[in-house]
Image (cartoon, rainbow, N blue to C red; front, side):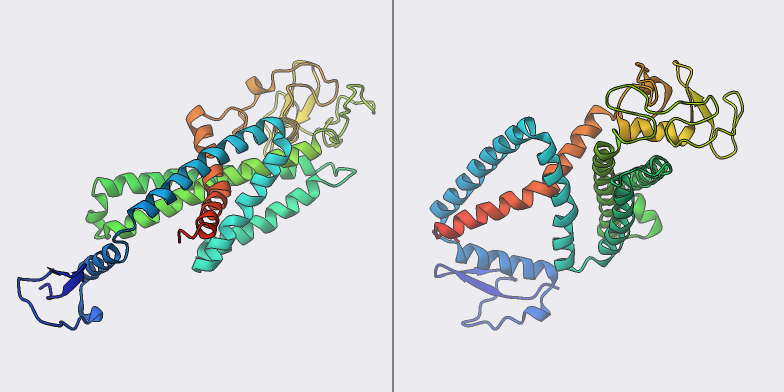
Amino acid sequence: MAGVFEVEVDGVEHDHGHGQHDESPEIDISQLSPEERWRLEHARMHARHKGHEAMHAEMVLILIVTLVIAQLLLVQWKQRHPKSYNMVTLFQMWVVPLYFTTKLHWWRFLVTWFIFSVVTAFVTFRATRKPLECTTPRLVYKWFLLLYKISYTTGIVGYAVVMLTLFGINLIFRIKPEDAMDFGVSLLFYGLYYGVLGRDFAEMCADFMASTIGYYSASGMPTKHLSDSICAVCGQPILVDVSEEGIIENTYRLTCNHVFHEFCIRGWCIVGKKQTCPYCKEKVDLKRMFSNPWERPHVMYGQLLDWLRYLVAWQPVIIGLVQGINYILGLE
């Protein structure tokens, strides 16, 4: 049963037990239930902040003004200098969670972050080398497609666990609601975080690789002669006919009649981000020919990724700025 304890707030004693009163009760917090501890801390907090309403109003006003100004500045920065904005945002999305998870000792996240960072750093290193190796577009495509599938599946499973927990399905398996919800939210965050981070790294690799792939040139004039049996992206022979079903990968022919390895042309769709043939630069609707997970995301999914970027990359910076302003003004 609940114990008896009293908390004095502004000279008024508040009974949190069964109506019994002592002159000077001794409270042993270790003997209290979690609910009683929360009520005790809540009462102490009210006593500590009594009469600080004006200061709290100023702090809320500073928070709102800072959020509005920061949002306006970020929007203008993104519109005027998108390349620098995307690079800084990507860097912060990569390192900000590292700081908090290290501080909170979330080792599972740190392990997955380390594995992701090592592999992505290697892929990015390969994508930024000049001259570009012929196998790099395939490597870039395979890694980021794998990452997309894993993150998408993880996010879906996490969302399903959250919804099933809300409907009480976890009770069938005798799983506590808080444990099931924590598991589902964690999976959802992992899926969204690595999904948006992988997508941004793929686009960064695209900016480095688009003008250095195979036979492609910015002027549109091929720098090499292309044989019918050679892939224009990697320069390697094509072993599977267009009409045949490949064991590992198929061969694709664009409307301009140039043929490519499946992974090479899919890699071009991602890293080149151009609806043109990698060899002759003829206008080709690559979006119709290939299903690229990054090309046309659902509108709501794209908005969700933008919100996650803001939440992970910029929200901690803004909150830290607000705390700094409050400290300078003596409001903390």
